[in-house]
Length: 167
Image (cartoon, rainbow, N blue to C red):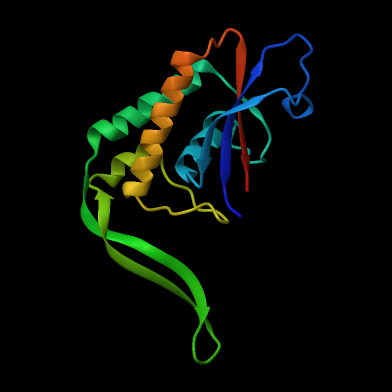
């Protein structure tokens, strides 16, 4: 279980069938628990409605997200810091449920306020971590690289791009 996110492409057509009725589409990007990216798509493309439906993504939206990712990567650095290793619930000796968080040394973002402003994390049921760390940066790099490839390689006059999530 968890947050799965997809960009798919579908040939533009005149029949205007809803994407969920037209099985002729192809996945072109996939994220797992990249809640900051999901939040951006929900806020920007889905008018803040998080309902796991298919939403058309405009070329300008893709470029805007690339620009945001580039700004985060330009203006932040990973430094040594305390990172969350495990986060879980268990019963103690008296059978009371307790929340346990285990930390260790890893890489964190030196200026998390930039990330909080541009691409804040979002908590949710199985949405993944909300820390500004090396995993966050990995999601940002993947997003930038994948979206740039989509702009570079696809003839967007012939394809529609849709965002879809599942949780």
